[in-house]
Amino acid sequence: MQRLNRDQMAARVARDIPEGAYVNLGIGLPTLVANHLPREREIFLHSENGLLGMGPAPAPGEEDYDLINAGKQPVTLLQGGAYFHHADSFAMMRGGHLDICVLGAFQVSVGGDLANWHTGGADAIPAVGGAMDLAIGAKKTCVMMEHLTKSGESKIVERCTYPLTGIGCVSRIYTDLAVLDVTPDGLTVIETFHGLPFDELQRLTGVPLIA
Image (cartoon, rainbow, N blue to C red; front, side, top):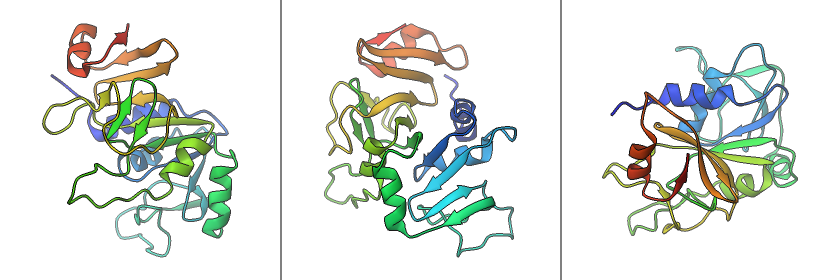
């Protein structure tokens, strides 16, 4: 079974981000989206540590570790970009001023519940960061994640078993196998990759899907 690699996943997410959008890219996989945004579109990337107008990752050797995103990765700042206090940044997030956030996840439920900050394991280090604020504050919350765990279990579940980040907040899920929308009728498959049949995606996911 062929899957998208991480850069292919990021490029697929980037295609859906429209002109003029204000967007937050969560820690982990979502940060790769910045490297694949269409050059002809003006898109404003926000980071909760107090940046607006981020560009792609810097070229090797040009990193400035005074200029980092929320995941402590070096970034670039586009012309017109701005720095500000993180309290102002969280006010943007909580005030509904972001059009889209793209977050990683441990689990997403069929109803759009999100679990992405803690697995509940005794040895796990909880790290909620700004995820709760983003999940409910952005106008649209998308998830970018691998479809299956390392042990082959679906990360898309009937009900989340990990501590929740937000309830009913996710509207679209991007995985290495498919794109799915969370709708009132259930999970609708928008696209599958590398010719993956719907029946096989259904088998791997283990929860009802709408073709």
